[in-house]
Image (cartoon, rainbow, N blue to C red; front, side):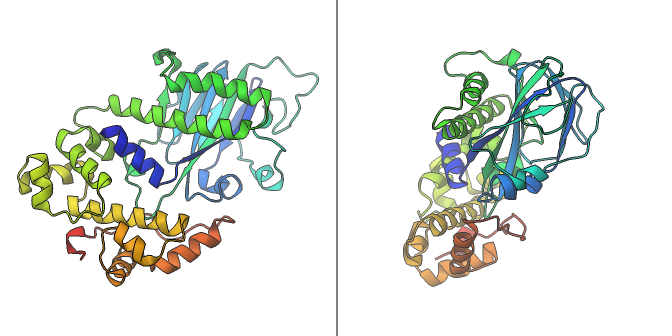
Length: 358
């Protein structure tokens, strides 16, 4: 149940991965990575939000995000920055450098990932003849997703998620450990179809990382992922994701999960920060936005799939929640699919109440 709800959300926000760099480093070395929004137009122009990830395939290094403690990474470790924060990777803690990403906008290799060298020279495709032996090798990539109109996962994730190799089992179902090995092999061989393979295994790695993070959340943790784990809140989320067009009322939802209306309201708000009906309304807008962008379905059909009997009522609700009409949203997203058109409006939905929709 929990994993189905998570899968539903990841499909709706269009999670997609890309392994972009294979970096060989010789000491001393440092690379400073700007906020992902700086690189997004060059790497994932079709996405609204981009997360960074790094995998150590040889040696060790340090990762630092402002306001967080530096983390030492070892061979097989995976680190993900869900909010795309600017960060520093280096051979020793405390080193700094000037971010340099101009080359991303100037050229693209025939086949990804980019092969880079750090240390002796910056951003060179070939290692200098007098270079020291490679001491650290990294695979660096990105995960893109939609931010608007409603992505409750982003707000529940920390700035840094670290999966140490020492805690990975290496079993067949341990996708994080498998990813480190498969991505290293695929990036070096550069076989036909390799980019698609790296994209898909990046996505599987991230899902496995989320499941691992969910399993280790403290009992008093709050947020969307913690809500999935809760007996009552998780059931409500499952019902709404499975039947979003259902004309749910608080009485029906409370009866299905076995709580009183007031108890359910209080518990749901504690975990999610919205009432159940507000969440349902926001989720319906996310479903509608995906249908508007990815299909030529009529507005009337989109309205029905989003739980509205009237196209006019749906259009009013969509504009009230998202800020633009469904037709404008579709037109803007159709245009931006071919280039880096970023929405300047803020990523949150207003707390609309689904119980007020016809």
